[in-house]
Image (cartoon, rainbow over all chains, first blue to last red; front, side, top):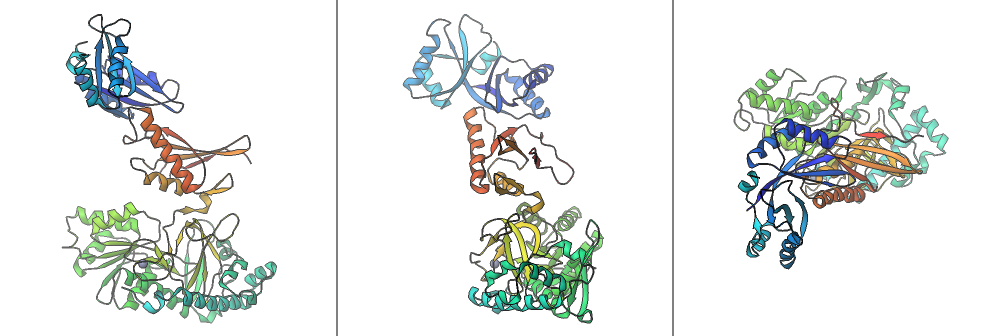
Length: 145
Length: 433
Ligand SMILES: [Zn+2]
């Protein structure tokens, strides 16, 4: 029930995000979702690609001298209406899970909203959301978006 | 094995009494026989009879390499030239070479120190010692040769170079102890492996004593694996005697200084004040048994730390750490002496951190600032900011506790710090003086 996310270390230097996107784009990698965390010293770019693009993307990044890592995140689908996301977060709160970060997908096949969630415990997170009846997307479903 | 237990395991109290007696004799000799040093002592207002305790050594003026150049070749001899039986020296990379005159006593003192080092590595009369240091003015070859001969070991005086022949002799004669530089030992080991020879079967080495250049713990592990040996460090300098001034025992935890022949101090290179054991600083040696060309408070410009905690081997002498840098590399930041090597040791001690760094020193609002740029590794990287920040904080805390200076840690992409051939440029000082 997890989706693969690629995280990339970026220096806080003008043009570094462009260089990254240029590298991935020219390598034929299409990003389905993207978020950037920035601190005063550096940035972390997190993104989702189709499953079959994860390894080629990593190879490109390493060739480009960038540090990147893959980890599992949860992808939830929820109605695109007020409190859609609040209802999901409520489940996490009830289960004492904290959100490390989250970001939304650029597109969705239906009227629903799709978000990436990184919580303090991915296994318990999936369990809690399943029990609460929250829809989660598999990697295959994400690939089809 | 301990070559001279009665001398190497002497009680600290007895040792100190012996050192004082020998120091007083050496100062008296130097004052009487060496006009240059007498003038320096007179200028400081110190007379030989002012040296009443070992601590009084701090009243004596320092000697430097420049003194050896200025009084080249024989201006620092304390013995008549007819008593000098040997000169050794170094070519030096700049200007005039230095030469050091040895009386027979001095050659014997030096030999004894090397014999102790070899015995500490397990060598004895049944051993076959292959010496691949150069023989000549450089003290490596003859030093190891004399020390091994005095032990009664069989010496193969190969001198440096001709690796194929070195390995042939090593195999055919069954060398058990290797004396050379650590870099040449690595080369020998790699060549042995490439030739398909098996240490323990074709090669019978059990120990190697490596010196004349700085090396690291990682290199020790590599050498021990490559050659199937105990790899031990030896320290020395021609000005003081040659290799053997200090040597490692099989505990591999610092080099025992031959304190019955030399007094070792570590000083603050700026204030020139002696530092307590455990504090890194500049290594200073005083010879107390040499008669040809004694050296008093000779500044080595090598940075190291002394350790006087008891060694399990039973020797009572203090141990010096590996040389971690040169005083020329030292930075003074907010009044604190900082050696790039200290920062490096902090970085390698943290899991996942690579020792690729750059120190940038600046002055902002008349206060010194230190920024440490560290290349990020995959191990340090995470998808969450908090985990990366935790590593950054750990580095900052460790530097603060080891070096005593607050540093700003900046993570930079891998391979972004320039690597020059050989020595990397580690420091950029933006301060204007
Ligand atoms: Zn020991």
